[in-house]
Length: 253
Image (cartoon, rainbow, N blue to C red; front, side, top):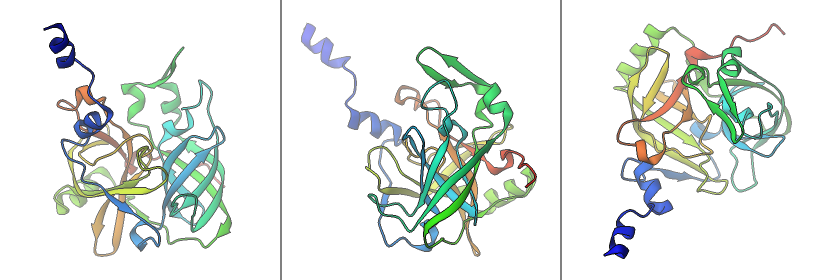
């Protein structure tokens, strides 16, 4: 009887945990080279401490990612080093040097630094989006992905027209440097703090990945992936993205 009780209360396997995280089913597709234009601007952003996140080129010298990607190494801020578009098992179409990273000062102010790491508080969560300035050093530059730049009312209209159906693509920890995408997933709420709750299948590594709406003019980036709850809280909380309404102010050049 003791053995049965122990089995009943055993920690779910990693595969079972991921199934819970994926709302019961893995709906992702694998994206391989040669990349279709929709995915060409998406790539891996690597920091000096060798932590990887996903980022998206939004202009010839600018990309967008998650702010927390620069706080995973220690209590001190990490620096971006490389951004590689259409990354596929060490291959890429373009390689950029990360020149600088810009995020809202309120994100840094809201971080909770503890002995075991840095935690994003609810106060900081809404600012978990960053801009990186990049310089092409190798390869052929892809066409940037268009980014939403209107106000909240206009964003609501865009999402309503799309019936809250979006797409997401990034580099999750279980795919070993291969892009995975969840197409036609749903935004479940636009919060007062300009974050969105969504049901796109994401894992670590997807941080900073684009969440976009399909439009007649092509993909329109509306948010970046920020965080997901632990699997135990999946029934209560959806994944969180930060909309482009929260982009930090860019310094004058």
